[in-house]
Amino acid sequence: MCGLSGEVRLDGGAADVAAVAAMTRAMEPRGPDGTGLWSQGPVALGHRRLKIIDLSDRAAQPMTDSELGLTGVFNGCLYNYQDLREDLRAEGYRFFSTSDTEVLVKAYHRWGRACVERFMGMFAFAIVERDTGLVVLGRDRLGIKPLYVTRDARRVRFASTLPALLAGGGVSTDIDLEALHHYMTFHSVVPPPRTIFTSVQKLPPATVRTISPDGTTEDVTYWRPRFTRHLSREDWSAAVLESLRTAVDRRMVSDVPVGVLLSGGLDSSFIVALLAEAGQRDLKTFSIGFNAAGGESGDEFGYSDLIAERFATDHHQIRIDDARLLPALTGAVAAMSEPMVSHDAVAFYLLSQEVSRHVKVVQSGQGADEVFAGYDWYPPLADVPRPGVTDAYSRVFFDRPHSALAGVLSPAYLLGADVSRDFVQAHFDAPDAETALDAALRLDTTVMLVDDPVKRVDNMTMAWGLEARTPFLDHELVELAASCPPALKLASDGKGVLKDAARGIVPDEVIDRTKGYFPVPAIRHLSGPYLEMVREALHAPAAKSRGLFRQDHVDELLAAPSEHRTTLGASALWQLALLELWLQTHGA
Image 1: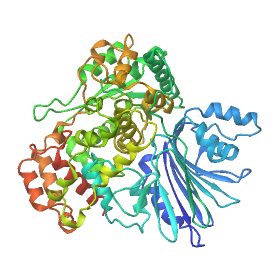
Image 2: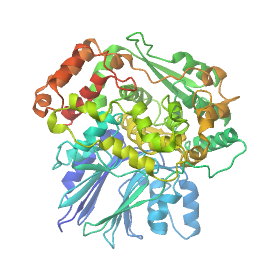
Image 3: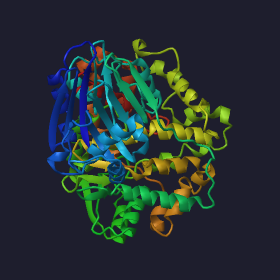
Image 4: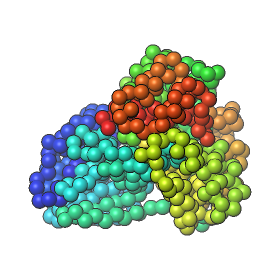
Protein backbone atom coordinates (compact mmCIF):
# COMPACT_ATOMS: atom_id res chain seq x y z
CA MET A 1 0.00 0.00 0.00
CA CYS A 2 1.56 3.23 -1.10
CA GLY A 3 1.17 6.39 -3.14
CA LEU A 4 2.35 6.76 -6.72
CA SER A 5 2.72 9.71 -9.07
CA GLY A 6 4.12 10.48 -12.49
CA GLU A 7 4.34 12.73 -15.51
CA VAL A 8 4.48 11.98 -19.23
CA ARG A 9 5.54 14.90 -21.42
CA LEU A 10 3.82 15.14 -24.79
CA ASP A 11 5.69 18.17 -26.22
CA GLY A 12 9.17 16.69 -26.52
CA GLY A 13 10.45 18.21 -23.29
CA ALA A 14 11.92 16.49 -20.26
CA ALA A 15 9.61 15.51 -17.45
CA ASP A 16 9.23 18.01 -14.62
CA VAL A 17 10.89 16.05 -11.83
CA ALA A 18 10.30 18.85 -9.31
CA ALA A 19 6.56 18.67 -9.92
CA VAL A 20 6.58 14.88 -9.53
CA ALA A 21 8.56 15.29 -6.31
CA ALA A 22 5.95 17.75 -5.02
CA MET A 23 3.14 15.33 -5.84
CA THR A 24 5.03 12.55 -4.11
CA ARG A 25 5.62 14.62 -0.96
CA ALA A 26 1.89 15.34 -0.75
CA MET A 27 1.29 11.60 -0.32
CA GLU A 28 3.73 11.01 2.54
CA PRO A 29 0.97 9.73 4.89
CA ARG A 30 0.15 6.98 2.38
CA GLY A 31 3.73 5.76 2.47
CA PRO A 32 5.68 6.88 5.54
CA ASP A 33 8.37 4.18 5.21
CA GLY A 34 10.25 5.37 2.12
CA THR A 35 10.28 7.55 -0.96
CA GLY A 36 11.76 7.42 -4.44
CA LEU A 37 11.94 9.29 -7.74
CA TRP A 38 12.92 8.13 -11.23
CA SER A 39 13.09 9.94 -14.57
CA GLN A 40 14.07 9.17 -18.11
CA GLY A 41 13.55 11.84 -20.74
CA PRO A 42 9.85 12.65 -21.04
CA VAL A 43 8.73 10.39 -18.19
CA ALA A 44 9.15 10.67 -14.42
CA LEU A 45 7.74 8.55 -11.61
CA GLY A 46 7.44 9.09 -7.86
CA HIS A 47 6.55 6.79 -5.01
CA ARG A 48 5.85 6.76 -1.28
CA ARG A 49 6.21 3.36 0.34
CA LEU A 50 4.38 1.57 3.14
CA LYS A 51 6.35 -1.60 3.87
CA ILE A 52 4.02 -4.60 3.96
CA ILE A 53 5.61 -7.27 1.74
CA ASP A 54 9.42 -7.63 1.53
CA LEU A 55 10.48 -5.07 4.10
CA SER A 56 13.96 -4.74 2.60
CA ASP A 57 15.22 -1.97 0.32
CA ARG A 58 15.24 -4.47 -2.55
CA ALA A 59 11.52 -3.80 -2.84
CA ALA A 60 11.88 0.00 -3.01
CA GLN A 61 10.06 1.90 -5.74
CA PRO A 62 10.15 3.13 -8.44
CA MET A 63 11.44 -0.32 -9.35
CA THR A 64 13.56 -0.72 -12.48
CA ASP A 65 14.30 -4.02 -14.16
CA SER A 66 17.12 -3.10 -16.53
CA GLU A 67 17.20 -6.54 -18.12
CA LEU A 68 13.53 -6.25 -19.11
CA GLY A 69 13.62 -2.52 -19.85
CA LEU A 70 10.74 -1.74 -17.48
CA THR A 71 10.22 0.65 -14.57
CA GLY A 72 7.13 0.56 -12.40
CA VAL A 73 5.33 2.06 -9.44
CA PHE A 74 2.57 0.22 -7.64
CA ASN A 75 -0.03 0.86 -4.95
CA GLY A 76 -1.86 -2.07 -3.40
CA CYS A 77 -1.25 -5.78 -2.92
CA LEU A 78 -1.27 -8.83 -5.19
CA TYR A 79 -2.54 -11.52 -2.88
CA ASN A 80 -1.49 -14.30 -5.27
CA TYR A 81 1.98 -12.88 -5.94
CA GLN A 82 3.72 -15.99 -4.61
CA ASP A 83 1.90 -18.27 -7.06
CA LEU A 84 2.56 -15.85 -9.92
CA ARG A 85 6.25 -15.71 -9.00
CA GLU A 86 6.48 -19.49 -9.21
CA ASP A 87 4.76 -19.43 -12.62
CA LEU A 88 7.24 -16.81 -13.83
CA ARG A 89 10.21 -18.68 -12.41
CA ALA A 90 9.10 -21.75 -14.34
CA GLU A 91 9.32 -19.63 -17.49
CA GLY A 92 12.88 -18.54 -16.74
CA TYR A 93 12.43 -15.23 -14.90
CA ARG A 94 14.90 -14.45 -12.10
CA PHE A 95 13.97 -12.37 -9.03
CA PHE A 96 16.07 -10.00 -6.94
CA SER A 97 13.39 -9.40 -4.27
CA THR A 98 10.47 -11.17 -2.62
CA SER A 99 8.05 -8.31 -3.33
CA ASP A 100 4.77 -8.32 -5.20
CA THR A 101 5.94 -5.20 -7.04
CA GLU A 102 8.63 -7.17 -8.85
CA VAL A 103 6.07 -9.86 -9.67
CA LEU A 104 3.84 -7.19 -11.21
CA VAL A 105 6.68 -5.84 -13.38
CA LYS A 106 7.70 -9.27 -14.63
CA ALA A 107 4.08 -10.33 -15.12
CA TYR A 108 3.60 -7.31 -17.36
CA HIS A 109 6.68 -8.29 -19.35
CA ARG A 110 5.44 -11.86 -19.78
CA TRP A 111 1.72 -11.27 -20.42
CA GLY A 112 1.49 -7.61 -21.39
CA ARG A 113 -1.65 -5.70 -20.50
CA ALA A 114 -3.47 -9.00 -20.00
CA CYS A 115 -1.41 -9.57 -16.84
CA VAL A 116 -4.18 -7.86 -14.86
CA GLU A 117 -6.49 -10.78 -15.60
CA ARG A 118 -4.18 -13.00 -13.53
CA PHE A 119 -3.99 -10.65 -10.55
CA MET A 120 -5.90 -11.39 -7.35
CA GLY A 121 -5.81 -8.20 -5.36
CA MET A 122 -6.18 -4.46 -5.20
CA PHE A 123 -3.88 -2.35 -7.32
CA ALA A 124 -3.11 0.79 -9.22
CA PHE A 125 0.13 0.92 -11.16
CA ALA A 126 2.17 2.64 -13.82
CA ILE A 127 4.65 0.77 -16.03
CA VAL A 128 7.13 2.52 -18.35
CA GLU A 129 8.61 0.67 -21.32
CA ARG A 130 12.16 1.94 -21.89
CA ASP A 131 12.45 0.92 -25.53
CA THR A 132 9.03 1.99 -26.83
CA GLY A 133 8.26 4.93 -24.54
CA LEU A 134 4.83 3.47 -23.76
CA VAL A 135 3.35 4.23 -20.34
CA VAL A 136 0.69 1.82 -19.06
CA LEU A 137 -1.68 2.62 -16.19
CA GLY A 138 -3.89 0.00 -14.56
CA ARG A 139 -6.53 -0.22 -11.85
CA ASP A 140 -8.09 -3.21 -10.07
CA ARG A 141 -11.50 -4.64 -10.89
CA LEU A 142 -13.44 -3.00 -8.04
CA GLY A 143 -11.49 0.26 -7.96
CA ILE A 144 -10.19 -0.37 -4.45
CA LYS A 145 -7.00 1.51 -5.26
CA PRO A 146 -7.43 5.01 -6.74
CA LEU A 147 -5.68 6.66 -9.68
CA TYR A 148 -6.30 10.28 -10.75
CA VAL A 149 -5.20 11.78 -14.06
CA THR A 150 -4.92 15.31 -15.44
CA ARG A 151 -3.91 16.23 -18.98
CA ASP A 152 -3.21 19.28 -21.09
CA ALA A 153 -1.47 19.86 -24.43
CA ARG A 154 2.00 19.49 -22.86
CA ARG A 155 1.71 16.59 -20.45
CA VAL A 156 -0.20 13.89 -18.64
CA ARG A 157 0.13 13.62 -14.87
CA PHE A 158 -1.23 10.93 -12.57
CA ALA A 159 -1.28 10.28 -8.84
CA SER A 160 -2.97 8.19 -6.17
CA THR A 161 -4.81 11.24 -4.82
CA LEU A 162 -6.39 14.30 -6.36
CA PRO A 163 -4.72 16.69 -3.85
CA ALA A 164 -1.35 15.32 -4.98
CA LEU A 165 -2.12 16.45 -8.52
CA LEU A 166 -2.96 19.89 -7.15
CA ALA A 167 0.38 19.95 -5.33
CA GLY A 168 2.14 19.49 -8.67
CA GLY A 169 0.71 22.81 -9.85
CA GLY A 170 -0.96 23.92 -13.05
CA VAL A 171 -4.30 22.19 -12.42
CA SER A 172 -7.50 24.15 -12.95
CA THR A 173 -10.07 23.96 -10.16
CA ASP A 174 -13.07 24.92 -12.27
CA ILE A 175 -16.18 23.03 -11.14
CA ASP A 176 -17.45 20.29 -13.44
CA LEU A 177 -21.19 20.98 -13.67
CA GLU A 178 -22.06 17.38 -14.52
CA ALA A 179 -20.07 16.14 -11.54
CA LEU A 180 -21.82 18.72 -9.34
CA HIS A 181 -25.18 17.43 -10.56
CA HIS A 182 -24.16 13.89 -9.58
CA TYR A 183 -22.93 15.11 -6.19
CA MET A 184 -26.23 16.83 -5.44
CA THR A 185 -28.41 14.06 -6.91
CA PHE A 186 -26.69 10.65 -7.09
CA HIS A 187 -26.13 10.39 -3.32
CA SER A 188 -22.93 12.48 -3.59
CA VAL A 189 -21.36 9.87 -5.90
CA VAL A 190 -19.44 11.21 -8.91
CA PRO A 191 -19.03 8.28 -11.34
CA PRO A 192 -15.74 7.84 -13.19
CA PRO A 193 -14.10 9.26 -15.12
CA ARG A 194 -15.37 12.59 -13.75
CA THR A 195 -14.34 14.40 -10.58
CA ILE A 196 -15.63 17.67 -9.17
CA PHE A 197 -12.94 19.48 -11.22
CA THR A 198 -13.17 19.67 -15.01
CA SER A 199 -9.41 19.20 -15.37
CA VAL A 200 -9.07 16.00 -13.32
CA GLN A 201 -10.37 12.54 -14.13
CA LYS A 202 -10.05 9.18 -12.44
CA LEU A 203 -9.08 6.03 -14.27
CA PRO A 204 -12.19 3.81 -14.16
CA PRO A 205 -11.98 0.51 -12.30
CA ALA A 206 -11.03 -2.60 -14.28
CA THR A 207 -9.26 -0.42 -16.84
CA VAL A 208 -5.80 -0.52 -18.40
CA ARG A 209 -4.76 2.66 -20.21
CA THR A 210 -1.85 2.82 -22.64
CA ILE A 211 -0.30 6.23 -23.30
CA SER A 212 1.84 6.41 -26.43
CA PRO A 213 4.74 8.89 -26.81
CA ASP A 214 2.63 10.94 -29.25
CA GLY A 215 -0.08 11.33 -26.63
CA THR A 216 -2.65 8.93 -28.06
CA THR A 217 -4.33 6.72 -25.47
CA GLU A 218 -6.14 3.42 -25.53
CA ASP A 219 -8.34 2.09 -22.73
CA VAL A 220 -9.19 -1.58 -22.25
CA THR A 221 -11.89 -2.67 -19.79
CA TYR A 222 -10.89 -6.15 -18.69
CA TRP A 223 -13.66 -7.19 -16.25
CA ARG A 224 -17.36 -6.73 -15.67
CA PRO A 225 -19.55 -8.96 -13.48
CA ARG A 226 -22.60 -10.60 -15.02
CA PHE A 227 -25.77 -10.31 -12.95
CA THR A 228 -27.40 -13.27 -14.63
CA ARG A 229 -28.09 -16.84 -13.62
CA HIS A 230 -25.10 -18.29 -15.47
CA LEU A 231 -24.01 -20.36 -12.47
CA SER A 232 -26.01 -23.26 -11.09
CA ARG A 233 -25.69 -24.09 -7.40
CA GLU A 234 -27.63 -26.45 -5.20
CA ASP A 235 -26.43 -24.77 -2.03
CA TRP A 236 -25.66 -21.09 -2.49
CA SER A 237 -24.86 -20.45 1.17
CA ALA A 238 -22.19 -23.19 1.14
CA ALA A 239 -20.69 -21.69 -2.01
CA VAL A 240 -20.65 -18.22 -0.45
CA LEU A 241 -19.03 -19.55 2.71
CA GLU A 242 -16.28 -21.32 0.79
CA SER A 243 -15.62 -18.28 -1.41
CA LEU A 244 -15.49 -15.94 1.58
CA ARG A 245 -13.12 -18.30 3.41
CA THR A 246 -10.79 -18.11 0.43
CA ALA A 247 -11.09 -14.32 0.22
CA VAL A 248 -10.30 -13.83 3.91
CA ASP A 249 -7.37 -16.25 3.73
CA ARG A 250 -5.93 -14.47 0.68
CA ARG A 251 -5.87 -11.20 2.57
CA MET A 252 -3.62 -12.55 5.31
CA VAL A 253 -0.58 -12.54 3.02
CA SER A 254 1.79 -10.08 4.66
CA ASP A 255 5.21 -9.73 6.24
CA VAL A 256 3.64 -7.73 9.10
CA PRO A 257 0.68 -8.57 11.41
CA VAL A 258 -2.88 -8.19 10.11
CA GLY A 259 -5.77 -6.99 12.31
CA VAL A 260 -9.52 -6.53 11.78
CA LEU A 261 -11.78 -3.48 12.03
CA LEU A 262 -14.62 -4.93 14.10
CA SER A 263 -17.81 -2.87 14.02
CA GLY A 264 -19.95 -5.56 15.63
CA GLY A 265 -22.04 -6.07 12.51
CA LEU A 266 -22.35 -9.32 10.60
CA ASP A 267 -19.71 -8.54 7.98
CA SER A 268 -16.71 -7.75 10.17
CA SER A 269 -17.80 -10.37 12.72
CA PHE A 270 -17.83 -13.01 9.97
CA ILE A 271 -14.23 -12.11 9.05
CA VAL A 272 -13.12 -12.49 12.68
CA ALA A 273 -14.96 -15.81 13.00
CA LEU A 274 -13.36 -17.23 9.85
CA LEU A 275 -9.89 -16.16 10.96
CA ALA A 276 -10.44 -17.80 14.34
CA GLU A 277 -11.71 -20.92 12.59
CA ALA A 278 -8.50 -20.95 10.52
CA GLY A 279 -6.39 -20.93 13.69
CA GLN A 280 -5.52 -17.25 14.11
CA ARG A 281 -4.71 -16.54 17.75
CA ASP A 282 -4.50 -13.20 19.56
CA LEU A 283 -5.95 -11.46 16.51
CA LYS A 284 -5.98 -7.71 17.07
CA THR A 285 -9.46 -6.23 16.61
CA PHE A 286 -10.57 -2.62 16.84
CA SER A 287 -13.91 -0.88 17.47
CA ILE A 288 -14.77 2.80 17.78
CA GLY A 289 -17.58 4.70 19.49
CA PHE A 290 -18.75 8.29 19.94
CA ASN A 291 -20.94 10.20 22.35
CA ALA A 292 -24.67 9.97 21.77
CA ALA A 293 -26.49 12.91 20.17
CA GLY A 294 -30.02 13.63 19.02
CA GLY A 295 -31.26 10.57 20.87
CA GLU A 296 -28.99 8.31 18.77
CA SER A 297 -26.37 6.00 20.26
CA GLY A 298 -22.80 6.53 19.12
CA ASP A 299 -21.43 3.01 19.51
CA GLU A 300 -22.13 -0.67 18.98
CA PHE A 301 -19.71 -1.92 21.61
CA GLY A 302 -22.18 -4.48 22.93
CA TYR A 303 -21.90 -6.49 19.73
CA SER A 304 -18.20 -5.97 19.07
CA ASP A 305 -17.40 -6.96 22.68
CA LEU A 306 -19.47 -10.13 22.22
CA ILE A 307 -17.46 -11.13 19.14
CA ALA A 308 -14.14 -10.24 20.75
CA GLU A 309 -14.95 -12.37 23.77
CA ARG A 310 -16.34 -15.28 21.76
CA PHE A 311 -13.24 -15.53 19.57
CA ALA A 312 -10.67 -14.43 22.17
CA THR A 313 -9.26 -11.54 20.16
CA ASP A 314 -6.84 -8.91 21.42
CA HIS A 315 -9.56 -6.28 21.35
CA HIS A 316 -9.14 -2.50 21.44
CA GLN A 317 -12.25 -0.47 22.24
CA ILE A 318 -11.69 3.13 21.17
CA ARG A 319 -13.92 5.82 22.65
CA ILE A 320 -13.85 9.25 21.03
CA ASP A 321 -15.08 12.24 23.00
CA ASP A 322 -16.30 15.42 21.38
CA ALA A 323 -13.05 17.23 22.14
CA ARG A 324 -11.30 15.00 19.59
CA LEU A 325 -14.08 14.76 17.05
CA LEU A 326 -14.31 18.41 16.02
CA PRO A 327 -10.58 18.91 15.28
CA ALA A 328 -10.48 15.58 13.45
CA LEU A 329 -13.03 16.83 10.93
CA THR A 330 -10.38 19.16 9.52
CA GLY A 331 -7.95 16.30 9.06
CA ALA A 332 -10.58 14.04 7.55
CA VAL A 333 -11.61 16.63 4.97
CA ALA A 334 -7.96 17.23 4.06
CA ALA A 335 -7.51 13.47 3.55
CA MET A 336 -10.42 13.24 1.09
CA SER A 337 -9.42 12.93 -2.56
CA GLU A 338 -12.96 14.02 -3.42
CA PRO A 339 -15.82 15.43 -1.33
CA MET A 340 -17.31 12.58 0.73
CA VAL A 341 -20.50 13.34 2.61
CA SER A 342 -20.86 10.18 4.67
CA HIS A 343 -20.54 11.09 8.33
CA ASP A 344 -18.52 7.98 9.06
CA ALA A 345 -15.50 9.34 7.16
CA VAL A 346 -14.32 11.03 10.33
CA ALA A 347 -14.98 7.81 12.24
CA PHE A 348 -12.67 5.88 9.91
CA TYR A 349 -10.15 8.70 10.13
CA LEU A 350 -10.00 8.58 13.93
CA LEU A 351 -10.20 4.78 14.02
CA SER A 352 -7.30 4.53 11.58
CA GLN A 353 -5.22 6.92 13.67
CA GLU A 354 -5.54 4.62 16.66
CA VAL A 355 -5.25 1.35 14.76
CA SER A 356 -2.05 2.47 13.01
CA ARG A 357 -0.34 2.56 16.42
CA HIS A 358 -0.76 -1.23 16.61
CA VAL A 359 -0.78 -2.71 13.09
CA LYS A 360 -0.12 -1.69 9.48
CA VAL A 361 -2.73 -3.91 7.85
CA VAL A 362 -6.39 -4.62 8.65
CA GLN A 363 -9.24 -6.52 7.10
CA SER A 364 -12.55 -4.67 6.88
CA GLY A 365 -16.14 -5.61 6.03
CA GLN A 366 -16.88 -2.95 3.40
CA GLY A 367 -18.83 -4.04 0.34
CA ALA A 368 -21.06 -6.77 1.75
CA ASP A 369 -24.22 -4.62 1.68
CA GLU A 370 -23.81 -3.75 -2.00
CA VAL A 371 -22.75 -7.25 -3.03
CA PHE A 372 -25.39 -9.14 -1.02
CA ALA A 373 -28.29 -6.60 -1.05
CA GLY A 374 -28.19 -5.45 2.55
CA TYR A 375 -29.55 -1.92 2.16
CA ASP A 376 -33.18 -0.97 2.67
CA TRP A 377 -33.56 0.52 -0.82
CA TYR A 378 -33.26 -2.91 -2.44
CA PRO A 379 -36.55 -4.60 -1.38
CA PRO A 380 -38.73 -1.94 -3.09
CA LEU A 381 -37.01 -2.82 -6.38
CA ALA A 382 -37.70 -6.56 -6.16
CA ASP A 383 -41.01 -6.54 -8.04
CA VAL A 384 -40.32 -3.64 -10.38
CA PRO A 385 -40.51 -4.55 -14.09
CA ARG A 386 -37.09 -4.38 -15.73
CA PRO A 387 -38.01 -1.38 -17.96
CA GLY A 388 -39.14 0.65 -14.94
CA VAL A 389 -36.02 0.30 -12.84
CA THR A 390 -34.58 3.77 -13.51
CA ASP A 391 -37.54 5.65 -12.05
CA ALA A 392 -37.87 3.22 -9.15
CA TYR A 393 -34.17 3.40 -8.30
CA SER A 394 -34.17 7.20 -8.53
CA ARG A 395 -37.06 7.43 -6.08
CA VAL A 396 -35.34 5.34 -3.41
CA PHE A 397 -31.71 6.39 -3.87
CA PHE A 398 -31.36 9.88 -5.37
CA ASP A 399 -30.94 12.63 -2.78
CA ARG A 400 -33.41 14.87 -4.60
CA PRO A 401 -35.02 15.04 -8.04
CA HIS A 402 -33.50 17.10 -10.84
CA SER A 403 -36.37 19.58 -10.58
CA ALA A 404 -35.40 20.43 -6.99
CA LEU A 405 -31.88 21.58 -7.90
CA ALA A 406 -33.15 24.97 -9.06
CA GLY A 407 -34.01 25.70 -5.43
CA VAL A 408 -30.57 24.63 -4.19
CA LEU A 409 -27.93 25.66 -6.73
CA SER A 410 -27.29 29.13 -8.10
CA PRO A 411 -28.39 29.54 -11.74
CA ALA A 412 -24.81 29.54 -13.05
CA TYR A 413 -24.31 25.98 -11.79
CA LEU A 414 -27.54 24.47 -13.12
CA LEU A 415 -27.79 22.05 -16.03
CA GLY A 416 -30.86 21.74 -18.21
CA ALA A 417 -30.50 17.97 -18.58
CA ASP A 418 -30.99 15.42 -15.82
CA VAL A 419 -27.53 13.93 -16.33
CA SER A 420 -27.70 11.74 -13.23
CA ARG A 421 -30.86 10.03 -14.41
CA ASP A 422 -29.37 9.69 -17.89
CA PHE A 423 -26.28 8.04 -16.42
CA VAL A 424 -28.35 5.56 -14.43
CA GLN A 425 -30.59 4.85 -17.42
CA ALA A 426 -27.59 4.06 -19.64
CA HIS A 427 -26.20 1.77 -16.98
CA PHE A 428 -29.51 -0.05 -16.55
CA ASP A 429 -29.91 -0.43 -20.32
CA ALA A 430 -26.68 -2.45 -20.57
CA PRO A 431 -27.00 -6.23 -21.00
CA ASP A 432 -26.17 -8.94 -18.44
CA ALA A 433 -28.53 -7.87 -15.66
CA GLU A 434 -31.73 -9.93 -15.68
CA THR A 435 -34.02 -8.21 -13.18
CA ALA A 436 -34.48 -4.67 -11.92
CA LEU A 437 -32.75 -5.63 -8.68
CA ASP A 438 -29.86 -7.21 -10.61
CA ALA A 439 -29.42 -3.95 -12.51
CA ALA A 440 -29.46 -1.90 -9.30
CA LEU A 441 -26.97 -4.21 -7.58
CA ARG A 442 -24.66 -4.04 -10.59
CA LEU A 443 -24.76 -0.25 -10.55
CA ASP A 444 -24.12 -0.08 -6.82
CA THR A 445 -21.35 -2.71 -6.92
CA THR A 446 -19.42 -1.22 -9.83
CA VAL A 447 -20.11 2.51 -9.34
CA MET A 448 -21.58 3.59 -5.99
CA LEU A 449 -19.50 1.17 -3.96
CA VAL A 450 -16.29 2.31 -5.65
CA ASP A 451 -16.86 6.03 -5.24
CA ASP A 452 -18.41 6.04 -1.79
CA PRO A 453 -17.49 3.41 0.85
CA VAL A 454 -14.41 1.97 -0.89
CA LYS A 455 -12.89 5.37 -1.59
CA ARG A 456 -13.74 6.53 1.91
CA VAL A 457 -11.97 3.59 3.53
CA ASP A 458 -8.89 4.00 1.32
CA ASN A 459 -8.59 7.73 1.97
CA MET A 460 -9.16 7.59 5.71
CA THR A 461 -6.95 4.58 6.44
CA MET A 462 -4.13 5.76 4.20
CA ALA A 463 -4.17 9.14 5.94
CA TRP A 464 -2.41 7.22 8.75
CA GLY A 465 -0.36 4.75 6.72
CA LEU A 466 -2.80 1.89 7.34
CA GLU A 467 -3.62 -0.68 4.64
CA ALA A 468 -7.24 -1.84 4.55
CA ARG A 469 -8.16 -5.09 2.81
CA THR A 470 -11.75 -5.91 1.88
CA PRO A 471 -12.51 -9.63 1.43
CA PHE A 472 -16.13 -8.99 0.40
CA LEU A 473 -14.68 -7.30 -2.69
CA ASP A 474 -12.71 -10.32 -3.76
CA HIS A 475 -13.67 -10.39 -7.44
CA GLU A 476 -14.43 -14.12 -7.42
CA LEU A 477 -16.82 -13.63 -4.49
CA VAL A 478 -18.41 -10.66 -6.28
CA GLU A 479 -18.91 -12.80 -9.41
CA LEU A 480 -20.52 -15.53 -7.33
CA ALA A 481 -22.84 -13.09 -5.57
CA ALA A 482 -23.77 -11.45 -8.89
CA SER A 483 -25.04 -14.76 -10.23
CA CYS A 484 -26.96 -15.61 -7.04
CA PRO A 485 -30.77 -15.33 -7.38
CA PRO A 486 -31.91 -11.96 -5.99
CA ALA A 487 -34.54 -13.56 -3.73
CA LEU A 488 -31.80 -15.36 -1.80
CA LYS A 489 -30.00 -12.09 -1.18
CA LEU A 490 -33.16 -10.24 -0.10
CA ALA A 491 -34.21 -12.99 2.32
CA SER A 492 -34.07 -12.42 6.09
CA ASP A 493 -34.32 -8.63 5.69
CA GLY A 494 -31.30 -8.51 3.40
CA LYS A 495 -28.08 -10.47 2.91
CA GLY A 496 -30.06 -13.66 3.46
CA VAL A 497 -27.60 -15.95 1.68
CA LEU A 498 -24.72 -14.42 3.65
CA LYS A 499 -26.60 -14.85 6.93
CA ASP A 500 -27.25 -18.49 6.07
CA ALA A 501 -23.55 -18.96 5.35
CA ALA A 502 -22.70 -17.49 8.77
CA ARG A 503 -25.01 -19.77 10.80
CA GLY A 504 -23.05 -21.89 13.22
CA ILE A 505 -19.96 -19.72 12.77
CA VAL A 506 -21.09 -16.27 13.89
CA PRO A 507 -23.29 -15.92 17.00
CA ASP A 508 -27.00 -15.72 16.19
CA GLU A 509 -27.29 -12.50 18.23
CA VAL A 510 -25.12 -10.77 15.62
CA ILE A 511 -26.66 -12.44 12.58
CA ASP A 512 -30.21 -11.58 13.63
CA ARG A 513 -29.63 -8.10 15.00
CA THR A 514 -31.13 -5.01 13.40
CA LYS A 515 -28.78 -3.60 10.80
CA GLY A 516 -26.54 -0.88 12.22
CA TYR A 517 -24.41 1.82 10.68
CA PHE A 518 -21.14 3.45 11.62
CA PRO A 519 -22.73 6.16 13.80
CA VAL A 520 -21.32 9.65 14.31
CA PRO A 521 -24.39 11.32 15.83
CA ALA A 522 -22.79 14.75 16.22
CA ILE A 523 -22.58 15.11 12.44
CA ARG A 524 -25.96 13.57 11.70
CA HIS A 525 -27.51 16.00 14.18
CA LEU A 526 -25.61 19.25 13.62
CA SER A 527 -25.61 21.55 16.62
CA GLY A 528 -23.27 23.59 18.80
CA PRO A 529 -19.69 23.86 17.51
CA TYR A 530 -20.43 21.55 14.56
CA LEU A 531 -23.23 23.81 13.38
CA GLU A 532 -21.00 26.83 13.86
CA MET A 533 -18.26 25.23 11.74
CA VAL A 534 -20.80 24.61 9.00
CA ARG A 535 -22.11 28.16 9.23
CA GLU A 536 -18.61 29.60 8.92
CA ALA A 537 -17.82 27.47 5.88
CA LEU A 538 -20.99 28.48 4.05
CA HIS A 539 -20.52 32.17 4.92
CA ALA A 540 -16.79 32.27 4.20
CA PRO A 541 -15.56 34.77 1.57
CA ALA A 542 -14.56 31.87 -0.70
CA ALA A 543 -18.08 30.44 -0.51
CA LYS A 544 -19.68 33.78 -1.26
CA SER A 545 -17.29 34.39 -4.16
CA ARG A 546 -17.98 30.95 -5.62
CA GLY A 547 -21.73 31.28 -5.13
CA LEU A 548 -22.52 27.61 -5.55
CA PHE A 549 -25.72 27.62 -3.52
CA ARG A 550 -28.76 29.86 -3.34
CA GLN A 551 -28.43 31.98 -0.23
CA ASP A 552 -32.09 31.62 0.69
CA HIS A 553 -31.69 27.83 0.67
CA VAL A 554 -28.56 28.00 2.82
CA ASP A 555 -30.38 30.24 5.31
CA GLU A 556 -33.33 27.84 5.42
CA LEU A 557 -31.06 24.87 6.20
CA LEU A 558 -29.09 26.75 8.85
CA ALA A 559 -32.30 27.83 10.57
CA ALA A 560 -33.47 24.21 11.03
CA PRO A 561 -30.53 21.87 10.39
CA SER A 562 -32.19 18.71 11.69
CA GLU A 563 -35.38 19.11 9.68
CA HIS A 564 -33.91 18.86 6.19
CA ARG A 565 -32.92 15.37 5.08
CA THR A 566 -32.10 13.73 1.79
CA THR A 567 -34.09 10.73 0.56
CA LEU A 568 -31.90 8.33 2.56
CA GLY A 569 -32.02 10.46 5.71
CA ALA A 570 -28.67 12.25 5.48
CA SER A 571 -28.27 15.87 6.53
CA ALA A 572 -28.94 18.16 3.57
CA LEU A 573 -26.99 20.91 5.33
CA TRP A 574 -23.93 18.71 5.80
CA GLN A 575 -23.97 17.82 2.10
CA LEU A 576 -23.65 21.49 1.13
CA ALA A 577 -21.20 22.35 3.87
CA LEU A 578 -18.91 19.39 3.20
CA LEU A 579 -18.50 20.41 -0.44
CA GLU A 580 -17.57 23.94 0.57
CA LEU A 581 -15.25 22.72 3.32
CA TRP A 582 -13.48 20.45 0.85
CA LEU A 583 -13.12 23.12 -1.82
CA GLN A 584 -11.76 25.61 0.69
CA THR A 585 -9.39 23.09 2.26
CA HIS A 586 -7.88 22.24 -1.13
CA GLY A 587 -7.61 25.83 -2.33
CA ALA A 588 -10.21 25.71 -5.09
